[in-house]
Length: 296
Image (cartoon, rainbow, N blue to C red; front, side):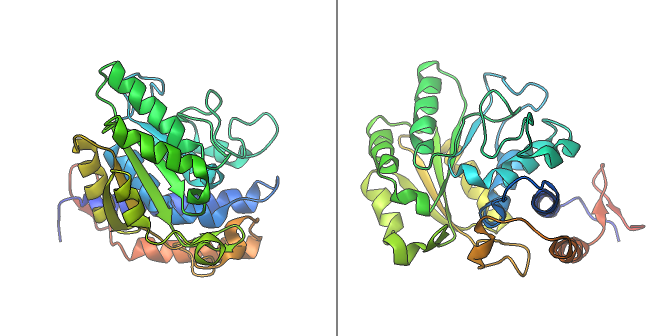
């Protein structure tokens, strides 16, 4: 059987590889804990951005015309570093230097240190303000580039987020998209128990944002809404992505103990087997030229 290469399945394979990288970092970096759960929950979003939606050039990371990405939930850096490595910003082997002394891959994204990182992040609540400033500057410079900001749901309890949320529509910053990774868990427990965000979509709408709610693990829905956000005119867009913390590996899903920890060798091996099964379920590996390789 011969079929045309399916973009969706290619993206799914990429997301599986990024999840492998995340668990590789968690098992083998050996320098402090790794935020596995938050990284796995946003993997499909980051995959869609870097491998389908954003206009970037890994060979020229500082290209002025590029789209920008701000990982406001900076503790999810394993997903970002993995995507950057898979996209070609730096060698994949460098992932295993994460959080080591003198590594370019520190415990939170650092502007000017890691190729492809557009903004330093880690102090929660600041990313949307930074993204707003970048987007506004791009508009003033008449550059046709878009800014995406990924926020955690627990992070939305920070007041600075809502100052930026109020300001962006007021200034018609329509080259800005906020993406909420809504997995309902934060470091201390359930978001609903700690400081409930409901009704979240209505809150963003009340500030003047165009709001879409999506399945944060449906690659087609993610790419469709992100692409639509890039063309939306007159006000910024907020995409509320309903996700599962620890998505993609059975024993990490919904388990908040994986918010920040390392993986044992046994856990790593189990995770790799599960991800192999997921990849095998996608069928033969697509080749360049638009046909399937049935010999695999």
